[in-house]
Length: 597
Image (tube, rainbow, N blue to C red; front, top):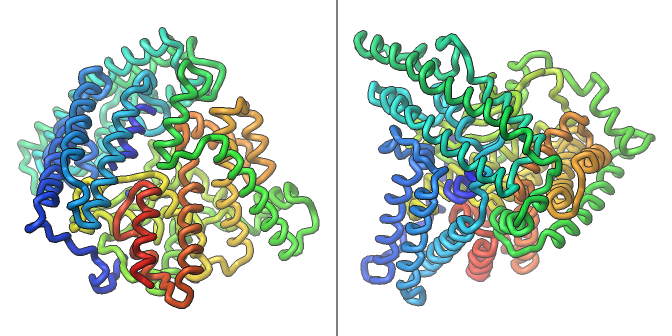
């Protein structure tokens, strides 16, 4: 949870239209304020890359791939505070009134980010170092397998990884110190999350180094490696696994199981820990980039659930089902006619078929398409059990494609009515692949904007893309449309359940029952969802809050512009500036609408 703060604030086709829509670089040569601003942004980006080398690597900067900062220490938090205060002060010394319109936008985004980061550092999120999501231990497992963002192309790359993991034991020791300080302050994880995290850690404990996921790069040495380097690295990787990685994962697992679990809380919501109400309000602001209160978001969720439920009732009658909505859900999830898949390859090919159906229609809705390659892959076995379908952004230079990962534990559980088409629209094309690729390909943006991720923008955009299904050639089967409605309902339910769990005393059991009463979801799936909301307070709010804002803006401009409204220009303008807080986006888009008139 502590990691989530800076990860989300820092920073996710094969054809392209002409580059006419690319945002031009503002002319700063004759604008002293603009020159100062550009210099500040460049300096910040360099300092940020050194401070957060894992983020730098994910964004294509491999200069610090041998580093793993110990972000669990007070010294590291103080270093962050000094950095953000210094850059905020430097920014405020620049006369905003003298900046170009695009530079004013960058100024506002940067000011928002610095102030939000400083606010987060005042809170005691550091007492909750990690749970089963977004943790350094699980990230290292993904990187060390050799198929993620950590490169393994040169001998130096292999040595960089050895240097990086040599710092993992110190990181783990500091995390344990923070967990213990949290225990003394009663700021502890819910017991259910600890029970999920321990097996994750134990999965990395193996007596045979060759069976470890971290041995993967050794099995895939590039052919041009000298024999002496192969021998040296093979021995070094065995030693790192046996002497550093396995003992550290074992130590973390045993600490959580034996010392932390007995003091983990039986309660679940964030408001149940000291200072938890303030923590949750911060998480809501951080994730939604709005000042909306938890109570207001809860009421929005209830209204959206009611609206979508009415649409489900209409579709139920359209396909001729005469029973209740819960009975309809059971029918959709148990009728074998809706579960045609037997193997992982069949599931992956179904997603490739979706891509083939929508690709010819993309030019109708977008004037611009990414240059970055795109792939569909099955999620690695070592993390599939706890993973969701997800998109991992590619490298800005195209050396690593954007990847849509699909966890497939049991192919027969994939269902035509489970929203496979809407899932692809959201996680892949045009959702996260278009948004993240076009953003980082836009070299006219300052780097802090090229690689920023504001969840309400990115997840809101991806959910908005689900609504584009009909015009992109999807949802022709009414049961796929039912699946899409189910996905929309799922995001509306999150507004109710996330706030309910963390601010209104809703129990996990009540949350599971509420989910199952309003969408086709099994008890096991609903339980996993609720545990996700417990581990990532506020994150589940981003989808619907962001999508509602984009739908509001589109409706506003369609009314204002009438026949002058151009859907392609609207989408290109939204994506052209990259991810940003919703309030800043609204100002940008209002200015766009004025220009269209």
